[in-house]
Image (cartoon, rainbow, N blue to C red):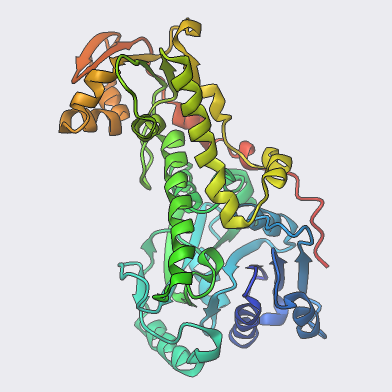
Length: 440
């Protein structure tokens, strides 16, 4: 059995979940042979004190406690734990998970000593989660207090007896060789603070040539997204609805962030080309309409300076406000730590037309009246949302692509088509210094 560093993220309301995943590791793996790193990002239940008591006579458990009163977030703490791990194999587990018998054995078996492989463990989830081919929906309880542990153990042994083949896919929990994580991926893109970081990660996994597989024999029970949504998010009451509304708005902004980066939303790599929208504001504008189309272009040039300033303020506000509320960040704290998170300065993408003199790769011109008049047309919507595919097809046509084109209400000047998404595959941009985080 190869030694493993199990890396567990814990946060508010997760004391008993964390103790539960530790119990399952102790009972279902060669526990003493492995290392367990626990990152307590936030704590309202004296989780730290409970873990200190739990780890007596267990020197393989190491703990880091965030004492800043502001969560660091899983997008960073996964890399922190992996960096501080001392074993060659690292596995990320969320606290709201329970591992099956021989989890370590089957995980290492699936990894197969392959330095270019990333393995995900299959998830078994209660029916509040939607069904999908890569997981099993079966109810063993929604909380540690009501968890049917013995039934789960019996079920997973039956599942292992089936010996289902590996399948393609990636999701948490996942693991790989430590060096693979840093040499190929570098870490998560920390501009995604509430969601979509996993989708970004999947694109880069595939594009860098890593083999992503899921094993059914090493599986976990995953309760209720406590790590990402908090407790009781699934209940039909006002508190849950309020919580989900905050999360929904934060998710909407993460989707915009994703489209700004990749040009689309999905899990497969597609090329993206640098585009500039030059829009003449020739009738009464709607900031919401401009905000709706903004993510699909790398640069926005407007003829009205006042409207431009309003769009900048509106876009910047939305980009940080809901995520800060989700993590309970004050504005002052966000301004202090903003440099620790990736992502472009949104102000840089907005330009007043009288100041615009560059000859960009692809310049797209339109007037606001024609845009609004045609916005509901399928041709216009398809052009905006699939702009990079249109340009890619032009590049692949075999003809000289440079020139002027008209599509719907847009006039295009195509000067150069270079895939800018390749820049996102450089692992070094996702690395950061983890030396200040000491596990003991």
